[in-house]
Amino acid sequence: MKLLSINVSKPKPIQYGGKTVQTGIFKEPVSGTVMLREKNIDGDGQGDLRVHGGTYKAIYGYPFEHYAHWQQALQRGDLTYGQFGENLTVEGLLETSVYIGDIFQIGSTVKLQITQPRVPCFKLAYKMGLPEFPKQFLESRRVGFYFRVLEEGKIAAGDTIARIEVASASMSVTEILNLRYFDRDNREKIARARKLSALSPSWKRDFTKILAQ
Image (cartoon, rainbow, N blue to C red; front, side, top):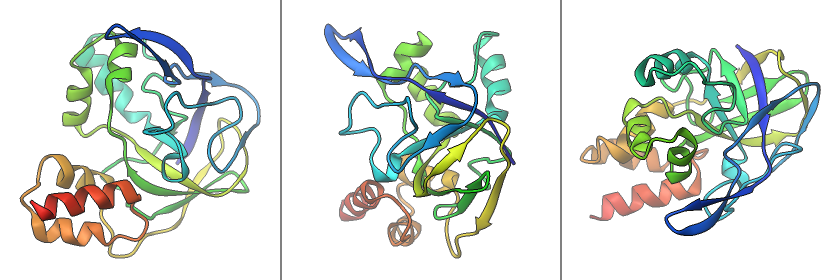
């Protein structure tokens, strides 16, 4: 497993739906060594901290393997690292094979833990120039995943990524995503998912609401 690119962006204003909103989705690759901190990466920022960033969504990772799918599906050859708003473009980590609570080490110091899938919003539609893209993105299950930061440190593109702890009795990122959006009648499994200690609090609340219906 490997870190292919580190991508950052400070929030910038865009016009959407007749309003001015801030977004940090226009990530661009940076070279050299970069400091990864508890809530973000140096040089990066989030436009709306109510729904982006924070402890459980500090770092967004996206599998490079999906780029080929989107190039073909969208008939586009202009997709570059950071295209989907990810902080880390990674190789060898897929939603079907990484689990909520898994801990990964990047380089010699940084330790990150998987907390939840990514759910796309209108800002991804704006960046891609495709109003329906968030729905297509979600339904593809190629959504990437968020990490919380267990240990800060310096990272660089090309660093090795190692899974140093496998979460026991957990569920994959794909399984968790399916339960919230595509398999909401599976109440037994949703009840089990809600108890995963490493799952972000917002997803636990969502599962609680589903079970209360």
